[in-house]
Image (cartoon, rainbow, N blue to C red; front, side):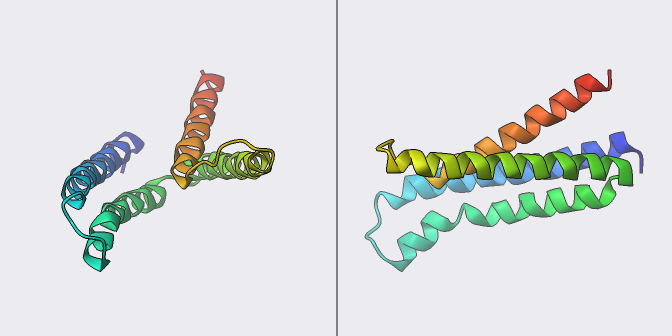
Length: 128
């Protein structure tokens, strides 16, 4: 399979999963306000995690489709992004001890994704 074809297939799978996630997320947030606290409400509020499984599946499939060189570059960027995110999380944990406001875990993925995207852009520019 050509790299371009694999990328198109990946984008369809990933954006489909993101679309389902968005629908489930907004649906759960709309419905939860009218529900009493309890296991059913908790299950509803964690239901957006299910479509995340589809996104993970799409990412894993894409890594299997990549040739070895592209896979190596992506895994290198992902490793650096994870290390930078871990360093920033640890540093901010110390800042919280100094009185900075607590941050939710929802900040972790955007930071890691942003670092990964930045590295991918820099890699692309470097190869031009």
